[in-house]
Image (cartoon, rainbow, N blue to C red; front, side, top):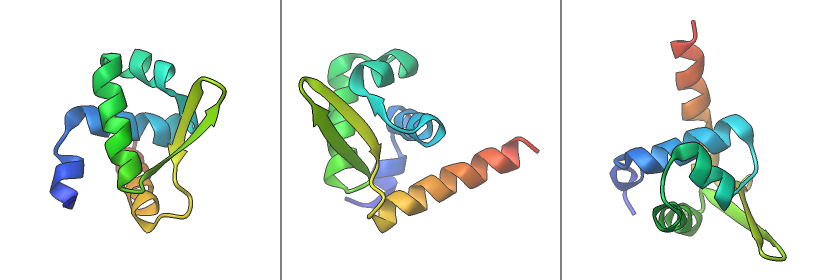
Length: 90
């Protein structure tokens, strides 16, 4: 997948910003905070996981998502979001 495809989706960017800000979250919390429906949220999370940006851990029936600490893509995305937020808050 090309970088344009990852960043071209406003819902995907909402999810990435949320996880960058709050850390590990479950799909229900992501859905609630982004105001997206469950199916759309799940599709975006799967895509971000396939790209190696997010990592999923399952605890029983609960799926938790966070940035994949071993992925250069994840580190780059997180750095971009952090830098963008810092500049906007100055």
